[in-house]
Amino acid sequence: MELQFYGATERVTGSSHILRLNGYTVLIDCGLIQGSPEDEALNRLPFPFDPPSINAVVLTHGHIDHSGRLPLLLKHGFKGEVFATPATIDLCKVLLLDSASLGERDAEYRQKHPSTKADKHAEPLYTRDDALRTLNTMTGLPYGKKHQIIPGIFIRFRDAGHILGSALVEVWMTEGDIAKKLVFSGDLGQYGGPILKDPETVEEADAVILESTYGDRLHRNLELTLAEIGEIIRSAGSRNGNILIPSFAIGRSQELLYLFGQYYKEWGLDQWQVFLDSPMAIEASTIYWDYPELYDEEAVAFRNDKSMMPHLKNLHFTPKPEQSKAINAIKSGAIIIAGSGMCNGGRILHHLKHNIERPECSLIMTGFQAEGTLGRSLVDGNREIVLHGKSYKVKAALHTIGGLSAHGDQNDLLRWTGGFMSKPEIFVVHGDKPVKKIFRDSIEERLHLKAVIPAPGDVITF
View 1 (cartoon, rainbow, N blue to C red):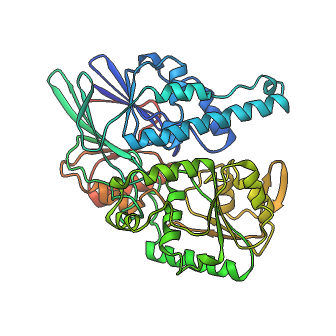
View 2 (cartoon, rainbow, N blue to C red):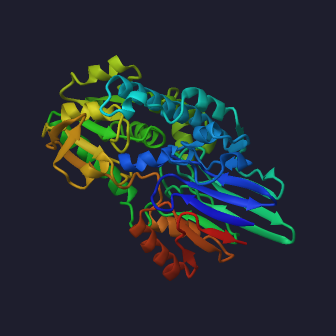
View 3 (cartoon, one colour):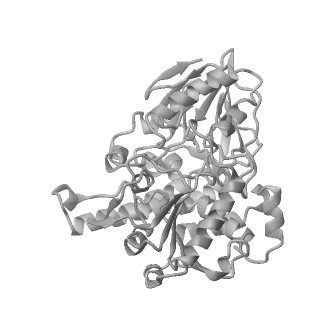
């Protein structure tokens, strides 16, 4: 039996790892590579494995950097089942169809407005039909249920606390007289974060494949973060501008609406008009509302006290393009939550064009910004950006809020890893190169566990 590493070994995104035993092959996640145009071009290269040879896929959660190449896998011959939690499947219905639609629109635009000869023949990475076929391969497994997916491999999903339905995966493997247990962390959430439960503790494993997105830093205390958000909103109100919040459609947008509902009076939100300007975030918010059994106790109590979703008197859903465009006529008093979370596409770009050069406006960055993205450029302090081919001066007040991350920080990751009683070997993935090295050293120094940073294509034999 063996484990082979592919995606998310050189970077944060593009998660995919392979298990082989008894003549079968299982893929853990199949994510898109995200970041710079050069990074995203890698998605068009052939898979580093043979798609028809994959017997099953195990999906940790719906985020595109974990699920986004599944339709491409089917296009290239995969015919097995994809196992995920029911909530993950519901979110994938939104995410994969949106990803396909974006690809189709981009290809159509390049064909009509070619800048190179290749653009005249541009094709999407996959289509909506490909995404729909992918959804038909998905089988839902609830948390806590042990299930055999192929001969010799049982899996069990446990709550990872990252986004709705996110799972860490226990994998039991038996080949002849050899029996091993692996645990894939997927993406782990923060302890004490809003809405979702904390990551579940697992005590036994021979090896752990562990994410390290924030393995080199600590998030700001949540109470201080909430106080900071309230102060930003009050300050922006006195300057008579708008607030832009680039936000991931899944997870972050729902957390923001939840917090806005909780702190409606305290933050003076009755003085604002709040716009959720993302069709995908609107759909995802409805899905979140349908899974109260996955909430923590505080969120359950808050939900039970409300008769509508979400509870904001001045919230406007703007799914249609003309509704989104109309927001830009508002010069003051609008809080605009729009995708994408890293500012590398989506409606936030249009709102930036109308607000980024206005000193009275504010821009709140609330999530991880991958290298090569516009969001990372803003967070790094660049004072001039390019939007749709035109340069804009960054004059709006920029605020980076770390405490709301859907990813656990170094202490959260070490706390979860410290729950193992069996002293497993740790394989550090899903992080920028310097971050992985810092996190590996922290694991060895603080937990006294052996930690390894695998390279793409590395094989571990058990």
